[in-house]
Length: 348
Image 1 (cartoon, rainbow, N blue to C red):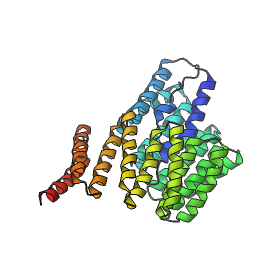
Image 2: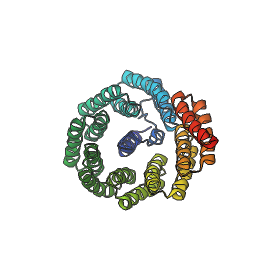
Image 3: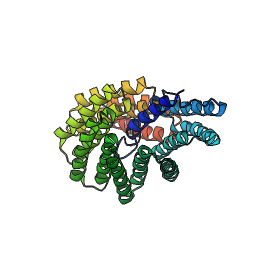
Image 4: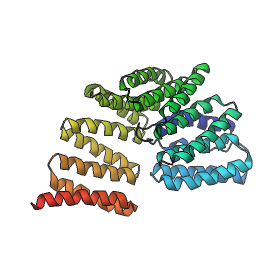
């Protein structure tokens, strides 16, 4: 495949990267890596190692799309070894990104930070300013997740400075959005809202609908934290619309979760149930059994909260079966305990 194809892949990767990693302040949200791998990495140097590495990278992406993060990592580690063997620094940096992002989602922060610092070193060695911007943002997110808020702000600020110096609209939008995330992590939601609103300007100017959706979800979270429900709903709905536009299910799911949280607080259960039905459809369409399990559990909890214990029991039973099939013993135990409480209540 020609060099132009590889460059297109990398541009696509950079624009989509944040939505995969910065899905929510409490955890990384998942844009499909599989979607980012629709163009082969092979840039014309036809070698078996390179072709094998490209295949392994895709196989990892397919596992990630299904929610099987632990299974994705071995594929990427094998791909990394092969890329190192052929000396392809561009692909090495890309693979470190995938590894760092996924380690972060799994809470393996030491490994995530190591992978992302290596990714950043590759970008600096190649004088790849775009790579530095996104590497710093990803590193900042890992730092934020492990509670190092000040260090995260430094990382995001450096990314914003580089983005401004090369006039990268997507980079500025991303970095400002993440500065908002860090500010929210410090508990200053009003300052976070200001950062998010600034970020939206660059997201729109840079024609970055997926990035805009991520920032809208962040904005919805900040408004929710300040109990400004109307503003929060507007932001989440905008994110859901953009998620549909870009066909990104994970963005839609996150926007739905925010709306469900609001309607549950307001006890507007019919609207919340309708949204969760949409969530279940999205999970099933993507064959993401983890998200399907999460949706069944949410439906069970919401029906229980609304006083409809018979329907809640049905959803708990479905969730338990799925948790058992996934081998998730901890989640299965939690669900069995919740179901037992319902049965005890009904037996009185």
